[in-house]
Every structure is written in C-alpha cells, then in structure tokens.
Length: 150
Image (cartoon, rainbow, N blue to C red; front, side, top):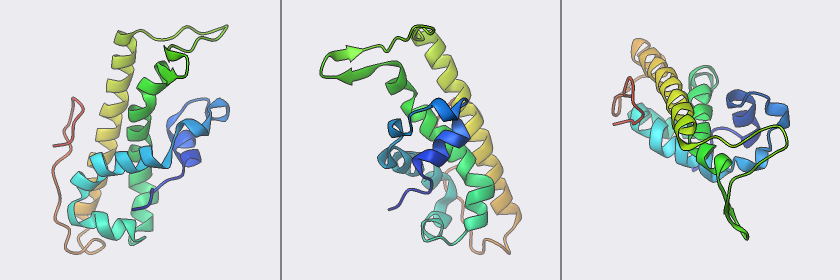
C-alpha cells in the first residue's frame, strides 16, 4: 500500500507555519496509518481503486485535506512529548512552553472534528455523483463529532 500524500504535502496542508516545520516528523508509515484508520473505513469499496490512482481528482479535491488533518492528529502527541535516548522529554524552546494535557487534548479534538467534517463532505460528494464513482458502496459513516470513525 502506498501513501496518498507525501510528508511535505501533509505539512503544507495541515500545519500553520509549515515552512518552519520539520517534515521528518511526518513519516510515510503515519500517513498509511491515517489512511487505514480513517479513509479506508469511510470509502468502502472505492478505497482500492483510489490506491491504484483511479480517482486523482477526488484525492486532490476532497481527500488530501482530511487525510492531512488525520495525520496531524496522529502526530500531535509525539510533538508534545518525545522519547529518545535521554528518556521521555518535553521539548522546550526559548519563546514557547509545551502544552499541558488539557490544551493538547482540546487541540487534537478540534483537528479531528475538522477532519471528520471534511471526510463527510467527500463521502457525500461521492454518493451524490454515482456516474463518476460507479458501484460505490459506502463503508462505515464518519461520525459527526467526537473523534472516531465507526
């Protein structure tokens, strides 16, 4: 399975101040994880053709934005707390202080709600255009709020 976006595309789409963000913090494995957890369940039988470059317009216009936000949601905890040879540490710069658990949880929730809304729009677009996406059988619906796809 191949990632549907590059780390650079994810950073440009999902992170404010993307020019200062280290794209190395976004890995192809994280992008694949987001695809499997969120896109595959919602897209149902269109997911396979999407991976085979079957719907490039759908990917560009509707799916890259929520995918980038889902990747952001996945990496946010590792941006707040890092594990390395010195143990589990919280990065600290001269002009910023790390977010506590509550602000981090709130920020992650907001990112997930936005991603879910964008993915719902994509699924609604697909369902409204059966001629462009023949045989579409939706997967599990995207939850309106909260943060899980079920």
